[in-house]
Image 1: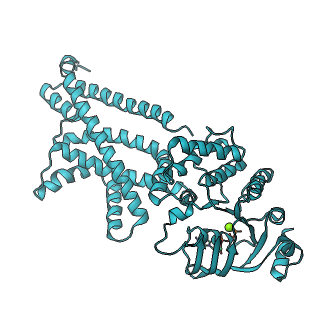
Image 2: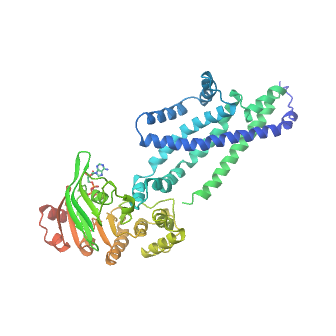
Image 3: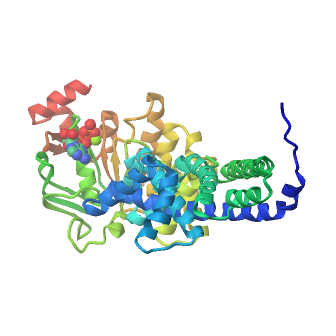
Length: 220
Length: 240
Ligand SMILES: Nc1ncnc2c1ncn2[C@@H]1O[C@H](COP(=O)(O)OP(=O)(O)OP(=O)(O)O)[C@@H](O)[C@H]1O
Ligand SMILES: [Mg+2]
């Protein structure tokens, strides 16, 4: 009833290529997260403190990022912009798509974080003569950062997994590369099984690193 | 000297301070008493510019707090403030809590700031707790930490907004003791308080606020034994 013969040799031979692709996956996910954190923080601050069209734009960003499929967001930067004559490289499509998505999700996390820090912390800081900038960067944001630390970790994991959508816009990150080899050798199961293990290891390493970092960062 | 002239404060249409005139001399300890909602906290916030005012002036050592050109961050260094809710910064140790503002606001070196901080913490009896995070301190200790933090800026004036109201009764004493010590050292203080014993024993003058008006001000003996205003007598009869 089960006459599939496993052939692992082709996979093992292309393992170096797969690991290179895994590195690319990690790279694009990390970059998207760094940009996503910066932009998400700005989006949260804009939505909390500003009025008018800029606030409306920020809200649209957050709504679209959170309430549409990540795949469509990627397609927008690929085929959507392409239709208007703006052609991004596959790498840029994935980076832009992931950044858009991460920034939207993180903006909501940041907003929750800011709301969780009592106003009185800001008042106390200002009463000591700190400027608003000092009070935010020294007192408020470090506390927000702790609150959003775990959501950020989760988002990082999600960014790694989500980057596999890159294969649908021709990006040869880990999934794209796997697809490429799999279709050439027809060892589809073997390739995707090995790739799944690689994803699993990456995610585990992220979680372990995050936990180690947390014990160093948060002593209180 | 703090000079308050015809101060009016509104929150929207709510008229919270209705023309306050008050001078506080160097070295004086003034207690401010009155019912909840009478505008006592708001008065303190207007003095250090945490709340804008709609009419009148607050002048601290010759500088108008609410004037356009005033460097409010510089002026606030002269005005230490302690809040009802002890606002220790939870992500910093006791020492870092106190050392931060001298370093980033006054530009002291790290070593200097830490030296000042350690000294102030010892001053309020927290010399053993330098490396501890606020979560490991009691409410009374956190409030003394807040006092040390304000003192580290070497202010000319200290504003206390019901510094003991949020504390468990058994912790009130240690904070009052610290405030009493400051008063004896000659610090100029404005203390909004519900502690009538403190107001009576420590202050030079007591001001009674009623619905946004300073109804009465005078030495503690006068306010507590010979109040002129009906409202003052009623209020004191109720709190005792
Ligand atoms: N940020 C604000 N916005 C609107 N109204 C406010 C604000 N802060 C205070 N008020 C109102 O102003 C009035 C005076 O408040 P304030 O806090 O100065 O009273 P208080 O005398 O300190 O009372 P308590 O003893 O309860 O602390 C109250 O009616 C209060 O509801
Ligand atoms: Mg009050």
